[in-house]
Image (cartoon, rainbow over all chains, first blue to last red; front, top):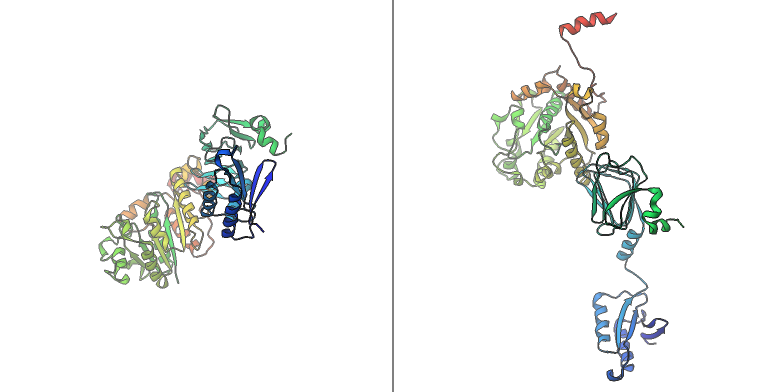
Length: 222
Length: 268
């Protein structure tokens, strides 16, 4: 059985590298395959773009370079991407972190900074001088007297919801607002967001559809 | 085996040293063997508050660096019949002269011989703080009813939570002015305790006598009828596991003559 197989698809060509074969074998077979398909560069029309699929094998950076170098020797072909059916545990954890809503119930004290990934449902307390930072949205049901930052470092589409009246600062991506004492009402339905002019503004929960249609649709709006 | 308790606050000037001296003295008066350790290297003053400054021969840095044996450096307070000892801080070195491991070693050496080893922590949260916390089993966080002191206490509690000791830290609120607290112009005790979220070990009322006595090198707890003294003695009893109710803010004792006279008329 060939360890490197070329397959035509609707979108172009898949180059499948069998996981059952050793990588050395794959390289040998791939070379043979490419040799077979070698044409004179003069008569060549368009380049053939390959999606390299490694099945359930994850290639290291070195291994990827080897394959790229090999293919680079044949001007008819170019690699579009290298993909596997599997990801590393570390990537998987990161993915899960990013996609989930995380429950956080702790006291963030003066000088402490808690850094999270993804959306956070915050049930704890942030004291003055404490900071909660995440890459996603923050939904706060706790009491906040410190700083909340959503969409870290640069995602302005994220939101902060909850009672922000007592917070010191609200930050989304790189935008920030210093919350003045009488600025906000004592309401859990306050939403902080970045508007079209890249200014941090506040709204109410019922305006969510207007403020962030994408999130609204995602959580069950029509 | 004794217990090592660090007395810390983050902010300076809230009364760590006074608290260390007084809790130590109160415990000694209860018959416990106490060793006070001054870790405020370079700015030692626990010895002054205790009136032992003229008796220092060696200090903690001498012990850590092997120039003296631990018993040689300990200063005995003769007033308390072999119950109270002080391990003084060095004055001519800075806080980096000690390493946390050295402090831990000294504390561990002291613990078997004493019921309590009280560690007086320097202000700040740098090396000196780390040194003081290194050997401790428990912590007393001292604060005053002022926003800056409470903020710093919050920071320190956070740090203590990151490197947990055997026991959770407990809170001591110092320098409470009864009149200001009664009319609401000072932060409330419950408010502070609730905010910091740690157990309240005791409250100490502000009293002029604390300053006058410490100037004489005599801890306030030796005056039995003083309200601040009472507060410190209550703290010592609570450390011993007794249940002692908090002193009342409202009970402003007024024993003046006219107060008594008006008392007769109100009585009916």
